[in-house]
Image (tube, rainbow, N blue to C red; front, side, top):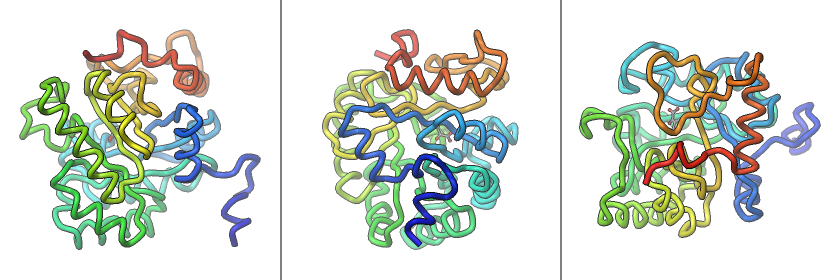
Length: 276
Ligand code: KIV
Protein backbone atom coordinates (compact mmCIF):
# COMPACT_ATOMS: atom_id res chain seq x y z
CA UNK A 1 0.00 0.00 0.00
CA UNK A 2 2.70 2.50 1.02
CA UNK A 3 4.81 1.67 -2.03
CA UNK A 4 1.85 2.44 -4.27
CA UNK A 5 1.39 5.82 -2.61
CA UNK A 6 5.06 6.65 -2.87
CA UNK A 7 5.59 5.58 -6.46
CA UNK A 8 2.37 6.36 -8.34
CA UNK A 9 4.30 5.55 -11.49
CA UNK A 10 6.73 8.43 -11.41
CA UNK A 11 10.43 9.05 -11.03
CA UNK A 12 10.21 11.30 -8.00
CA UNK A 13 8.06 10.56 -4.93
CA UNK A 14 5.01 12.80 -4.48
CA UNK A 15 5.37 15.86 -2.27
CA UNK A 16 3.70 15.61 1.13
CA UNK A 17 3.56 17.75 4.29
CA UNK A 18 6.82 16.25 5.53
CA UNK A 19 8.54 17.21 2.25
CA UNK A 20 7.30 20.79 2.62
CA UNK A 21 8.56 21.02 6.22
CA UNK A 22 11.93 19.60 5.15
CA UNK A 23 12.16 22.19 2.39
CA UNK A 24 11.57 24.95 4.94
CA UNK A 25 14.17 23.47 7.29
CA UNK A 26 16.73 23.21 4.49
CA UNK A 27 15.98 26.64 3.05
CA UNK A 28 14.71 25.34 -0.29
CA UNK A 29 11.97 27.64 -1.60
CA UNK A 30 8.60 25.99 -2.27
CA UNK A 31 7.22 26.77 -5.75
CA UNK A 32 3.41 26.78 -5.86
CA UNK A 33 0.77 27.64 -8.47
CA UNK A 34 -2.95 27.41 -8.86
CA UNK A 35 -4.54 25.06 -11.42
CA UNK A 36 -8.15 24.32 -12.20
CA UNK A 37 -8.14 21.67 -14.92
CA UNK A 38 -6.37 18.48 -15.99
CA UNK A 39 -4.33 19.96 -18.87
CA UNK A 40 -2.78 22.71 -16.77
CA UNK A 41 -2.34 20.30 -13.83
CA UNK A 42 -0.24 18.07 -16.08
CA UNK A 43 1.77 21.04 -17.35
CA UNK A 44 2.42 22.59 -13.93
CA UNK A 45 3.34 19.20 -12.46
CA UNK A 46 5.66 18.36 -15.35
CA UNK A 47 7.35 21.75 -14.94
CA UNK A 48 8.16 20.85 -11.32
CA UNK A 49 5.71 22.76 -9.10
CA UNK A 50 5.84 21.50 -5.52
CA UNK A 51 2.28 22.44 -4.57
CA UNK A 52 -0.86 23.04 -6.63
CA UNK A 53 -3.84 24.93 -5.23
CA UNK A 54 -7.34 24.65 -6.62
CA UNK A 55 -8.10 28.16 -5.43
CA UNK A 56 -11.45 29.85 -5.24
CA UNK A 57 -9.77 32.36 -7.57
CA UNK A 58 -11.41 30.07 -10.13
CA UNK A 59 -14.51 32.19 -9.53
CA UNK A 60 -12.68 35.12 -11.13
CA UNK A 61 -10.39 33.52 -13.74
CA UNK A 62 -12.59 30.59 -14.85
CA UNK A 63 -16.15 31.63 -14.06
CA UNK A 64 -15.79 35.37 -14.79
CA UNK A 65 -17.10 36.76 -11.49
CA UNK A 66 -15.63 39.94 -9.95
CA UNK A 67 -14.88 38.21 -6.63
CA UNK A 68 -14.46 34.71 -5.17
CA UNK A 69 -17.68 35.03 -3.15
CA UNK A 70 -20.02 33.09 -5.54
CA UNK A 71 -17.82 29.95 -5.64
CA UNK A 72 -19.44 26.85 -4.12
CA UNK A 73 -18.15 23.62 -2.58
CA UNK A 74 -19.41 21.72 -5.67
CA UNK A 75 -17.37 24.03 -7.93
CA UNK A 76 -14.20 23.32 -5.94
CA UNK A 77 -14.88 19.58 -5.89
CA UNK A 78 -15.39 19.52 -9.66
CA UNK A 79 -12.15 21.39 -10.40
CA UNK A 80 -10.15 19.48 -7.75
CA UNK A 81 -11.22 16.19 -9.37
CA UNK A 82 -10.08 17.47 -12.78
CA UNK A 83 -6.68 18.54 -11.41
CA UNK A 84 -6.22 15.39 -9.33
CA UNK A 85 -6.54 13.09 -12.36
CA UNK A 86 -3.31 14.28 -13.98
CA UNK A 87 -1.29 15.45 -10.99
CA UNK A 88 1.64 13.17 -10.17
CA UNK A 89 4.23 14.79 -7.91
CA UNK A 90 2.79 18.08 -6.62
CA UNK A 91 0.93 18.34 -3.31
CA UNK A 92 -2.75 19.14 -3.93
CA UNK A 93 -4.55 21.75 -1.82
CA UNK A 94 -8.19 22.81 -2.30
CA UNK A 95 -9.85 26.00 -1.11
CA UNK A 96 -12.81 26.03 1.25
CA UNK A 97 -15.14 28.55 -0.42
CA UNK A 98 -17.01 31.45 1.19
CA UNK A 99 -19.41 30.35 3.96
CA UNK A 100 -18.39 26.69 3.75
CA UNK A 101 -16.75 26.78 7.21
CA UNK A 102 -19.00 28.84 9.45
CA UNK A 103 -18.81 26.27 12.30
CA UNK A 104 -16.58 23.26 13.09
CA UNK A 105 -19.10 20.61 12.01
CA UNK A 106 -19.89 22.26 8.67
CA UNK A 107 -16.16 22.81 8.06
CA UNK A 108 -15.42 19.16 8.77
CA UNK A 109 -18.19 17.92 6.46
CA UNK A 110 -17.08 20.15 3.59
CA UNK A 111 -13.38 19.38 4.10
CA UNK A 112 -14.15 15.66 4.02
CA UNK A 113 -15.96 16.14 0.68
CA UNK A 114 -13.03 18.07 -0.78
CA UNK A 115 -10.70 15.24 0.25
CA UNK A 116 -12.89 12.19 -0.45
CA UNK A 117 -14.69 13.36 -3.59
CA UNK A 118 -12.19 15.90 -4.92
CA UNK A 119 -8.98 14.12 -3.92
CA UNK A 120 -7.42 17.10 -2.11
CA UNK A 121 -4.60 16.36 0.32
CA UNK A 122 -5.10 19.57 2.32
CA UNK A 123 -7.73 22.25 2.57
CA UNK A 124 -7.16 26.00 2.78
CA UNK A 125 -9.35 28.41 4.68
CA UNK A 126 -9.22 32.17 5.14
CA UNK A 127 -9.17 33.67 8.61
CA UNK A 128 -7.32 34.32 11.81
CA UNK A 129 -8.36 33.98 15.44
CA UNK A 130 -12.00 33.55 14.44
CA UNK A 131 -11.11 30.22 12.81
CA UNK A 132 -9.03 28.72 15.65
CA UNK A 133 -11.80 26.42 16.84
CA UNK A 134 -12.39 25.23 13.27
CA UNK A 135 -8.68 24.62 12.61
CA UNK A 136 -8.45 22.69 15.89
CA UNK A 137 -11.51 20.61 14.99
CA UNK A 138 -10.14 19.77 11.52
CA UNK A 139 -6.67 18.99 12.90
CA UNK A 140 -8.22 16.71 15.54
CA UNK A 141 -9.74 14.74 12.64
CA UNK A 142 -6.40 14.61 10.78
CA UNK A 143 -7.48 17.02 8.05
CA UNK A 144 -4.36 18.90 6.89
CA UNK A 145 -5.00 22.65 6.98
CA UNK A 146 -3.48 25.69 5.28
CA UNK A 147 -4.58 28.91 7.00
CA UNK A 148 -4.77 32.04 4.84
CA UNK A 149 -3.97 35.44 6.46
CA UNK A 150 -3.34 38.97 5.23
CA UNK A 151 -5.63 39.96 2.37
CA UNK A 152 -8.59 37.57 2.54
CA UNK A 153 -10.42 37.88 -0.80
CA UNK A 154 -13.60 36.28 0.63
CA UNK A 155 -13.87 39.36 2.90
CA UNK A 156 -13.55 41.83 0.02
CA UNK A 157 -16.98 43.38 0.62
CA UNK A 158 -16.22 43.79 4.33
CA UNK A 159 -12.74 45.27 3.75
CA UNK A 160 -13.88 47.48 0.87
CA UNK A 161 -11.52 46.26 -1.87
CA UNK A 162 -8.40 44.22 -2.52
CA UNK A 163 -5.75 46.12 -0.56
CA UNK A 164 -2.47 45.57 1.29
CA UNK A 165 -2.96 44.39 4.89
CA UNK A 166 -0.86 44.71 8.05
CA UNK A 167 0.79 48.10 7.41
CA UNK A 168 -0.38 49.39 10.79
CA UNK A 169 2.15 48.14 13.42
CA UNK A 170 -0.63 47.08 15.79
CA UNK A 171 -2.38 45.04 13.08
CA UNK A 172 0.98 43.61 11.98
CA UNK A 173 1.64 42.36 15.54
CA UNK A 174 -1.88 40.91 15.65
CA UNK A 175 -1.12 38.97 12.45
CA UNK A 176 2.10 37.57 13.92
CA UNK A 177 0.24 36.50 17.08
CA UNK A 178 -2.67 35.00 15.12
CA UNK A 179 -0.34 33.03 12.89
CA UNK A 180 1.30 31.45 15.96
CA UNK A 181 -2.11 30.59 17.40
CA UNK A 182 -3.15 29.03 14.06
CA UNK A 183 0.02 26.93 14.05
CA UNK A 184 -0.64 25.86 17.65
CA UNK A 185 -4.24 25.01 16.72
CA UNK A 186 -2.88 22.57 14.13
CA UNK A 187 -2.43 24.49 10.85
CA UNK A 188 0.21 22.74 8.73
CA UNK A 189 0.92 25.63 6.35
CA UNK A 190 0.25 29.35 6.43
CA UNK A 191 -0.49 31.42 3.33
CA UNK A 192 0.09 35.18 3.49
CA UNK A 193 -1.43 37.47 0.87
CA UNK A 194 -0.59 41.11 0.13
CA UNK A 195 1.39 42.23 3.16
CA UNK A 196 4.61 44.24 3.60
CA UNK A 197 7.92 42.39 3.17
CA UNK A 198 8.98 42.86 6.79
CA UNK A 199 5.76 41.38 8.10
CA UNK A 200 6.14 38.37 5.77
CA UNK A 201 9.67 37.90 7.12
CA UNK A 202 8.58 38.26 10.78
CA UNK A 203 5.75 35.72 10.47
CA UNK A 204 8.00 33.24 8.63
CA UNK A 205 10.71 33.53 11.28
CA UNK A 206 8.27 32.99 14.11
CA UNK A 207 6.72 29.78 12.70
CA UNK A 208 7.87 26.19 12.34
CA UNK A 209 5.36 25.40 9.60
CA UNK A 210 6.05 26.50 6.00
CA UNK A 211 4.79 29.95 5.02
CA UNK A 212 3.75 30.51 1.39
CA UNK A 213 3.41 34.07 0.15
CA UNK A 214 1.59 35.90 -2.62
CA UNK A 215 2.64 39.52 -2.50
CA UNK A 216 4.29 38.85 0.89
CA UNK A 217 7.90 39.52 -0.08
CA UNK A 218 10.95 37.32 -0.65
CA UNK A 219 11.55 36.03 2.89
CA UNK A 220 8.64 33.58 3.07
CA UNK A 221 9.32 29.86 2.53
CA UNK A 222 7.58 29.66 -0.83
CA UNK A 223 5.65 31.62 -3.43
CA UNK A 224 2.30 31.10 -5.12
CA UNK A 225 0.66 32.89 -8.04
CA UNK A 226 -2.62 32.50 -9.86
CA UNK A 227 -1.59 30.57 -12.99
CA UNK A 228 -3.60 32.74 -15.39
CA UNK A 229 -1.99 35.91 -13.96
CA UNK A 230 1.61 34.75 -14.46
CA UNK A 231 0.79 33.39 -17.94
CA UNK A 232 -0.72 36.80 -18.79
CA UNK A 233 -4.12 35.26 -19.59
CA UNK A 234 -6.05 37.25 -16.95
CA UNK A 235 -7.90 40.18 -18.48
CA UNK A 236 -7.30 43.69 -17.12
CA UNK A 237 -4.78 44.98 -14.60
CA UNK A 238 -2.98 42.36 -12.52
CA UNK A 239 -1.71 43.06 -8.98
CA UNK A 240 1.76 44.58 -8.39
CA UNK A 241 3.16 41.25 -7.16
CA UNK A 242 2.46 39.47 -10.47
CA UNK A 243 5.25 39.00 -13.00
CA UNK A 244 4.36 38.06 -16.57
CA UNK A 245 6.46 34.91 -17.05
CA UNK A 246 5.30 34.50 -20.67
CA UNK A 247 7.63 37.37 -21.61
CA UNK A 248 10.53 35.81 -23.48
CA UNK A 249 8.76 32.44 -23.86
CA UNK A 250 6.59 30.95 -26.61
CA UNK A 251 5.16 28.03 -24.65
CA UNK A 252 3.29 28.10 -21.29
CA UNK A 253 5.39 25.20 -19.96
CA UNK A 254 8.57 27.26 -20.44
CA UNK A 255 6.97 30.19 -18.63
CA UNK A 256 6.01 27.91 -15.72
CA UNK A 257 9.52 26.39 -15.65
CA UNK A 258 10.98 29.88 -15.56
CA UNK A 259 8.65 30.85 -12.65
CA UNK A 260 9.72 27.76 -10.69
CA UNK A 261 13.41 28.48 -11.35
CA UNK A 262 12.93 32.12 -10.28
CA UNK A 263 11.23 31.08 -7.03
CA UNK A 264 13.95 28.54 -6.30
CA UNK A 265 16.84 30.93 -6.99
CA UNK A 266 15.02 33.80 -5.20
CA UNK A 267 15.00 36.10 -8.24
CA UNK A 268 11.20 36.27 -7.92
CA UNK A 269 9.74 38.24 -6.22
CA UNK A 270 11.97 41.21 -7.09
CA UNK A 271 11.63 44.56 -5.26
CA UNK A 272 9.08 45.82 -7.81
CA UNK A 273 6.72 42.95 -6.82
CA UNK A 274 6.84 43.77 -3.10
CA UNK A 275 5.00 46.00 -0.63
CA UNK A 276 6.57 48.10 2.11
O1 KIV B 1 -7.75 31.29 -4.54
C1 KIV B 1 -6.54 31.45 -4.76
O2 KIV B 1 -6.06 31.27 -5.88
C2 KIV B 1 -5.71 31.89 -3.66
C3 KIV B 1 -4.41 32.60 -3.93
C4 KIV B 1 -3.79 33.03 -2.70
C5 KIV B 1 -3.42 31.86 -4.67
O3 KIV B 1 -6.09 31.73 -2.54
